[in-house]
Amino acid sequence: MSAVRPIAMRDALLDRVWRAMSTDDRVFFVSADFGSPVLDRIREQFGDRFVNVGIAEQNLINVTAGLALEGYKVFAYAIAPFITMRCFEQVRVSLALLSQVRPMNVSLIGVGAGYSYVVSGPTHQCYEDLSVMRALPSVTVYSPADHVTTAALFDRCLGERGIKYLRLDAQVLPPIYDAAPPDVGAGFHVLRQGEHVVLVATGYMVHTALKAAERLAAAGLSVGVVDLFDLGGFAAERLRTVLARYAGIATLEEGFRGRGGLDAMLFEFAARRGLGVRMLNFGVEPGYRFELGTRGELHEQVGIGIEAVCRGVSSFAAEVRAAVGAQPECQAG
Image (cartoon, rainbow, N blue to C red):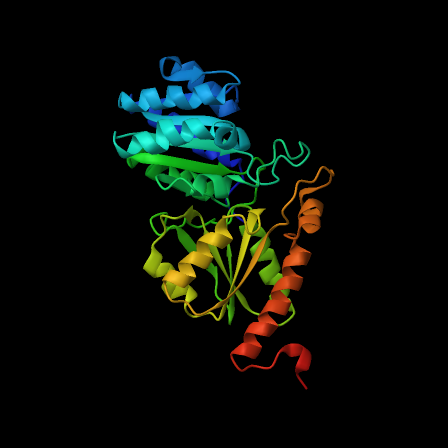
């Protein structure tokens, strides 16, 4: 059992924001009618550097841009699909474009990645933000898997200029890092070593990857697991070295498969870095669904549940091992 008490990602980040506001009067917080207990503290103690713009995400972005141009380090806070897609033009023009000609430090906090608002349906669930925000070349996308990584990313958000998007889960997830946070400068962390096949996952899907790896290990199949939490700003050569020892890479994301998310990023990375590997991508089957259920049930329906991942990786590993000269288990004996 982990010695670290699990808390919501947003509370881990907002606590760091609150502490920074007590020592740095250039930190400003803007919310789109979205709250939390920690945010109540920020509003009460630093009311002169807190603005609630209401349910108006386009205005949220433009107010944020204005404050950033005045030299503030701005944290903007809303539900994930609304802070990315409802105001995409404002993010593109007022932040992504403008930040290339004027110094700005803005961190967009989107809560509700993937299916984490599980009972709210596709209007509040968020499967497109990885693709949408990655399309903006001047925006850094962070997709942490637990609150420990989320808190560790705060220092980069506060200290580095530019536009950052933090994709946070709305549910309280068990901590993956209980001894120390990962090296956020690397942008990824190797959680498990394996043979032939490695699972590269981001966000909630890191938990799925670890559970799948445990099940597969019990069945005699060893796979590696990499947590990729910085989509684009990772240490490229270090990641290439890690991936080069495997003959197969499987990507896992809680976003639409084949629509420009993690899978597209790693396909392009492998091609440009000369990684001669087979690749398999696990993502949400394209299309919107309106059924209700647990997160696990919905994941199985769209092809990213633990059972679906185990089946897919088992078949993929057999193909990979056959390609490198090993006999698949189904043909052994």
